[in-house]
Amino acid sequence: MDGNGRWAQSQGSDRTIGHREGSRAVRTIVRAARRVGIEALTLFAFSEQNWARPPAEVVALMELLRDFLVSEREELIENGIRLRTVGRVEKLPSRVREVLDPLVADTAHLDGMTLTLALSYGGREEILDAARVLARRARDGELDVDAIDEAQLEGALPSLAVGRVDLLVRTGGEQRISNFLLWGAAYAELHFTRVLWPDFDEAELYAAIAAYQKRERRFGRVESAPLEPAVPAPAMADAAGE
Ligand code: FPP
Image (cartoon, rainbow, N blue to C red; front, top):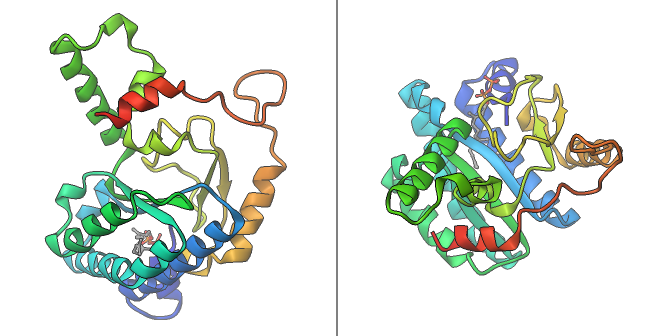
């Protein structure tokens, strides 16, 4: 969700004003995604690397996140939206955790759309954590090292619980993945737009989806394939049990 800072700068405002407008755009896009029937939407709200931003900006982002969770609680529930997180959420301040954790628990049974907030998240860190999970299971004799396959690794990656990434949208003109869903985005279609995140609205989302619908997804094969081969169900069931 890039471009909040530049959006604010263009208005002669402080970066935090840009994040506030970015938060409005989050509301708009979550509603629009639900309306068009997107099953899973993952938003990169705060990276593991964002902790290195000036403390005042970090505090402002945490307050906006808390405000969002408080103000959207009812609407998320009414619309059947399951909220989950990926990332090292244990690092978030208790002011955020005290509204985040109950909302995650209270929406766990909903199946209208899954909204995942990536918070204190890094794709490399997630893969590193998964490697540790598998290594511990191998050490404890629960896992045959030579039998480790993609499905088992995916089972240990929380971001993969909603499947692999079909479409990855990056705003603000950057053309990088910047440590977002690294494993899941291996065959994602990439959509880069110069539009700054606060200006990213329904029309921009629909344009990204329309562009995606014109792509031919081959996954390294010759013929076109509508969907990436799914991870076998038992592996995902294992993951849920972890
Ligand atoms: C990147 O723009 C954006 C962020 C680091 C924060 C995104 C957070 C929000 C949109 C609001 C809070 C989140 C939720 C879920 C309500 P940037 O600051 O790097 O902008 P720039 O590229 O113009 O500098």
